[in-house]
Length: 229
Ligand code: DX5
Ligand code: ZN
Image (cartoon, rainbow, N blue to C red; front, side, top):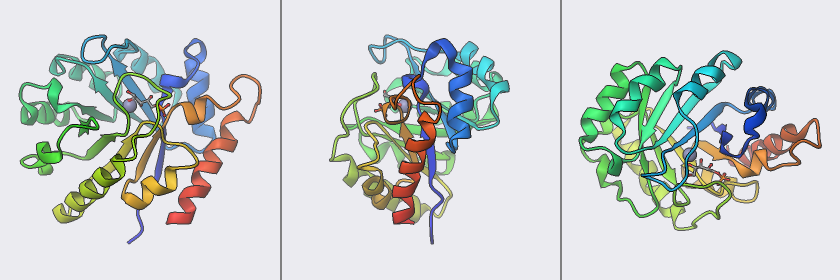
């Protein structure tokens, strides 16, 4: 059975002064999903963007908007992102008092729901909620910043998460986030991932100098994935 691979540029590394154009360009380059990193300067040390920016981007693209919440507490911001046009909302279990309740809240708001695992967070959080999740997001760096180095131990965790998904028989996407580049995306896919977040690898490429800046790197990522499929 061949998996469908999806490329999800993280706009964390985009040029915020022209975010709409960045999203248009990267989707035109063949990206499938817009990965939207929300940081609160509390759960993680950085501070980024919120529902108002999501709302502004919604009319710019029909691509899936995948909101990664690095926010604590998490529940109260979820309805705002749903109203702002998010398609998928994921959160870190450490940031929720009641994980089952937060997952239900996301789905009741009309979005797909997912759990995010930091490098040292146990997959056991999945034990009693597999029927309530649509996506598992594995961090391959510690959350908070773009441009960090991929932690190789994540490959074992991807394999373990893939086993859990296959055993569940459900169509749960397995997304990997952090340090994904042309030179390691095939290994990440072979381990079992099917959604690939790439921030600096895509938006760091010849930004502002080359009109086809994103086409080249998205095509290179896709070519690596074609070797796996
Ligand atoms: C980190 C974010 C990532 C990050 C990925 O906390 O969740 O999405 O932007 O950036 P790169 O691909 O540069 O590691
Ligand atoms: Zn992210």
